[in-house]
Length: 191
Ligand SMILES: C[S@@+](CC[C@H](N)C(=O)[O-])C[C@H]1O[C@@H](n2cnc3c(N)ncnc32)[C@H](O)[C@@H]1O
Image (cartoon, rainbow, N blue to C red):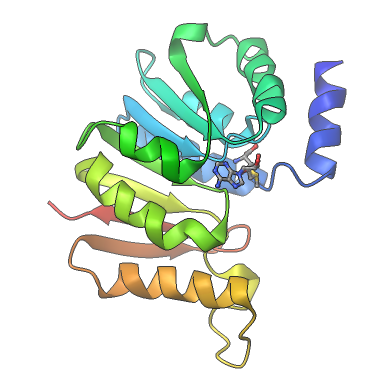
């Protein structure tokens, strides 16, 4: 039953995280020994599930989404995977309303997979939230190749291009791109 609901949600495009991206998230969380993680865009809990698998057993995933219905599915997905409720803090709301309420320099990893039009603003929030050496991951950062093609100028691509450029040009970040999904941007918060 749960699997069917989750598969339907994935088919409807509520989750965009591929198996390869999920495995990368798990590795990034494990290598960083992540205890406190923010997941922007809970969806049906696919990314959150991978992050929880890589995080420390005593770690807490703070996950944000404006759709309580998506989070209801995610809550069941997390529980079905054996995660006690104490491992997740599920917050309903708009990312740009919720992120200012989270503590400065308190997080090891911020994963962003919600709305490309907010990637620049969420990157700025992540700079405040992450401890030095912490990691920001942006899903879909290359727009599947559209970002690197200057002839493509639709709004979403332009916004993604701005977010990637801001990260690349900032001393606060050490960015790298993994060729997974539509481009997984992984950036370390400079020390
Ligand atoms: C691509 S899905 C996320 C998939 C999720 N990472 C997963 O693996 O299941 C995007 C999610 O972001 C949420 N969302 C879109 N805009 C948002 C915003 N401004 N603030 C918070 N959540 C938002 C949508 O409701 C949707 O559930």
